[in-house]
Length: 227
Image 1: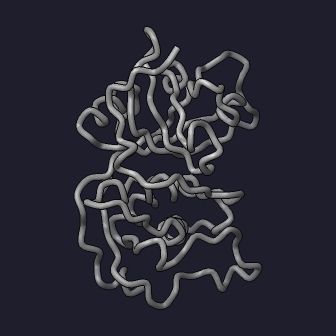
Image 2: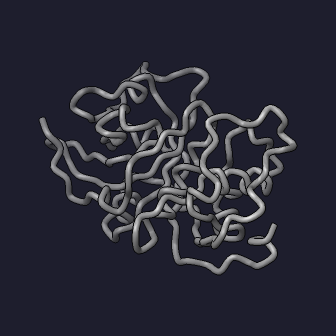
C-alpha cells in the first residue's frame, strides 16, 4: 500500500548528506533544517555547528551533541556555508588542533526553540511549512527500512542500549488508515528511499523524546562570529 502525502517539504532541501561514523546527527539535522529556512538551498557547515555546540556544552568532539547547546550555537554562533569548513570524515588525532578555519566568511544565525513533543505537534508545524528537528529512539527496523519505505513500531524491536538519533521531519500523510511522517536522515542516499523514510504515528509516539522548530534569522554577535 502506497503513502498518500499531504505535506512534502523535500523540495526545501538539497541532496541528503552522510554523517559517517561520527556522533553528529543533531548537527546535520539542525544544519539542514536551518538551510531549509533560507530562501535558496545552500548546505551550511554542520562541522561549525557541532564545534560550537560542543564548546557551549563543555563536551568533547567525540561525543554526541545536546539540543539546547545546538540551538544556542545556531542563534549565537551561526553557521557559514558548508565549503567554509567542510565536514570531517574523522576527527584529527590531536584534538587540540580541532577548530574552525581562521576565516569562514559570513555566518548566518537562526533562532529556535524546543517544543512540547507529540505527533500532532509535528503535523501542525509541517502544515505551516516548518520542518521539525525530531529526536527519537531507534529500533532495529529503522536501520534497514522495509522496501515500501514505512517504518512501524513493533514490540520487541528495540535496540539495547537504546540509540538516540536526530533527524528532520519534512512531511506527513497516510498509508491507508495509518498516519505517517516523512523523515530526512543523515546516513546518505542508500538509506530508505534516497535518504528519506516514512515513520508511523505509533513509532513516533513510542520513540520521540525531544523536538525543536527553527524560527527567524538572527544577527550573530560580532564577538561570536570572530571567535
